[in-house]
Amino acid sequence: MEVLFESFGFRALWTPELIIVLLVVGAIYTYIVTKGRVHFKDAAPVALRKKIYFILGLVALYIGWGSPLYVAGHIMITFHMTQMVFAYFVAVPLFLLGTPKWIFTAIIDKFKHTMLGPMFKVVWSPIMALFLFNGLFSLYHVPFMFDTLMQSELLHSLYQQFLFVAATLMWWHMLAPVPSTSQLSDLRRIGYIFANGILITPACALIIFAPEPLYQTYTNPAVWASVMAYCLPAGAEVPMSIFSGPNSFAFLETRMDQQLAGVLMKIMQEITYGITIGYVFKQWLQKEKQQDGALTISDIPVPKT
Image (cartoon, helix red, strand yellow):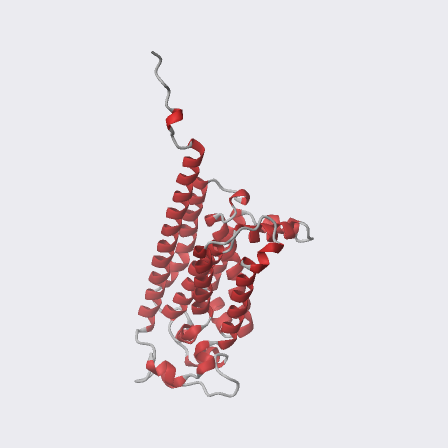
């Protein structure tokens, strides 16, 4: 890791512009859930737990889209996959869990009364969300697509944002942050989570079981130099020594690095989905208890004498 800090400057390693954006988002969130909630219908005080979830979501998104992992992910695909885990499997559900229902309700009502309303209904479909995220995720890991996106800062940034939106739609149907808008029963939500786990498996399998390294980004020095160029300030020299040689940052052979990346993604996906199944099951039990009602002394029939 030391060679990484020696070879790159503060801006390349820490992405200060992303820190500023996330701080602004955090400030807006803080205002809305405190003084600003008077402008929302049926707004209620927000639990500390939810505020912590949202802050952790901001931290996870920074780790996924910024931090030294951003540069490291351009050298080893294991770090790149770690970024994706934080951005789409940690940050997104934390944001959904940390945002109060009355904010979501206000946003949904706003969309319903705009020209985007009909399109909103189509995109909001669980089936659409299921195939949209997993399709974009799988397409991203097709070698030609991956290398093309990694060599274009604009295209890569846009694709990341599309993935984030798609991940939000997918997680929405799994977590159901506004139960009244949920299109799936609790049992179907559990099935939906299993379906997501199945659909993401081919992309992971492609990476794990490929007989050779798939991506020129990590094997071709010319392509790698092109990818690294937009991580550095204009005119800065790309430190080729960390790509190969005795000072190389890559501490694993390329194919082994690729296999580890696929295994990491699959394991972390299973963990996050497993936790989500537990969350859904807990909600299900709570609903059942509310419907059945607690047994009280008045509910016990008095025997006739």
